[in-house]
Amino acid sequence: MTAEIIDFKTKQKKVQEQSKASEVELDTRVLEQQTRDYANSIVDDYMVRLIHEWQADGMGIGSTNWEDSKKTFKEIGFFIEALRALIQKEFDIEHPMQRIIDKMMKIKYDKRQDKYYSQIQYYIPKEEKTVEFEGEELE
Image (tube, rainbow, N blue to C red; front, top):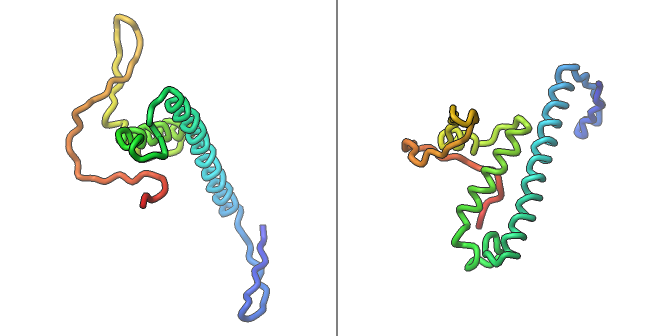
């Protein structure tokens, strides 16, 4: 693939060849971003519907009124990021919450029932690390 670039200072045209490898790399990055956007849209869609259901049941979860939503504000944020990590993992996309889940959750096997189950570990050794999540800055 070639690209024609115009230098507006000199008014000269430059033809730049793009290697097949860089085309594949670009295509891969575009596909990864589209997949991430799709995964995020799934999470957003489910959360809107779920919050609507909770509010229809009289709960203040996710309310735009701070007095109604402040009680569960951190929990809903945690829940949304955990759901985002779940959906993105399904698409083989890394999410910072996956590291937290790996530390909190253990997979166990029950021989009597011949099945696996997950179990939360409430005690997590203290680490002094901050994990950044996706999203908009709050004011």
